[in-house]
Image (cartoon, rainbow, N blue to C red; front, side, top):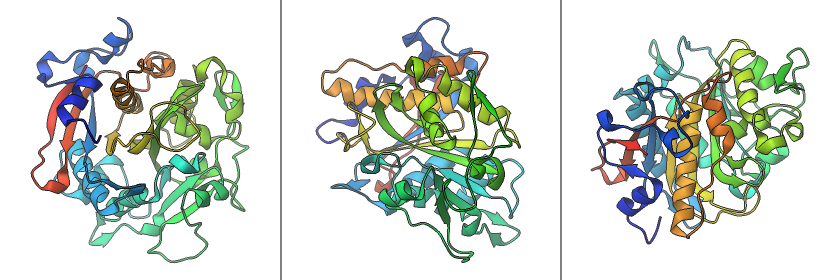
Amino acid sequence: MKGISRREFLKLAGVGALGLAARRTLGGLLGPEAGPPRDLASTVVQCYDDTATSGASVREPVVQVMMDESIKALTGLSDVGEAWKNVFPGIVSTSIIGIKVNCINSALATHPAFVNCIASGLARMNFGGNLFRRNNIIIWDRTNSELTAAGYTIYTGTDPATVRCYGTNQSGVGYDTTVALNVAGVTSRPSRILSQQIDFMVNAAVLRTHGTAVVTLGMKNNYGSVDNPGSLHGGQCNPYLPSLNQQIRDVITPNGKQRLFVIDGMFGLYSGGPGGSPNCVPRTLIMSRDVVATDFTGQTVINAERARRGLARVNAPHILTAAQPPYSLGTTDVSLVEIDNPTAGKARPQRRALL
């Protein structure tokens, strides 16, 4: 974000300071059929802080403030613990929450410092005077080696105050052969972490382009949740991505485990992804209960970075497909809540239309 004002960034991103009554459907950029009626807009929080990174590192104390302010803005609750509880209907003190990270590119994975801020917020949930146990949180991805390469530590102990972390290839885990997901005609088996070990899931994605899927965001993060992602790349991953996420929502029980979608946009790839080192520093956190709205907003941030460099917009077809039947995973009509520089102590959430 260095060298460009926040106002200029918003202009590049297509964000206008319009009232909710004047909100237009985001899908207007893609076609007249994009998204449901505008009165069904989904709230997305986009939080930016120009002190969130230092060199190649994420500044965890800054991101913690960003995370706390974002979850409060999303839920409308002033207490961080209560705000997190609001995301998980029916949660109890013994519930298990998984945080699905994306570590296939160790140079631009979901950062451990970023995920620590999610876990710290979850640990502030209060149940009858007892805080939620950190050991009831599982950070996970495909393999232990990908997690460790990205800076995570594989959990091997029994400490109730320690967050667990391991991959699907951990001994005793593996893929669930009792569950068959029909992903646009391809049978996929989910990780047992997803199907058997957790009650709720936070999807903690990354911000980057992709040579096949166009972008890697929340929906694409779930390719690391099944056994055969390589079989799901035809047609720019469309409709495989919407289909997989619909199957995770509707087939795996209890249904609708994914309750929150968060994008780690501290660093990003505006081109050349999914591999390689970051080539932009948006210092942005995106959060919503709606994966389609989340991914559309993430794509908008990528397009702002591209516009700064004179590059054409990208338009991932699976995002529009996901908003439509038979998938109906969310909406491209976004009510954007923007929070700028919350660590400065002066930031106030501003509600805008994302056009």
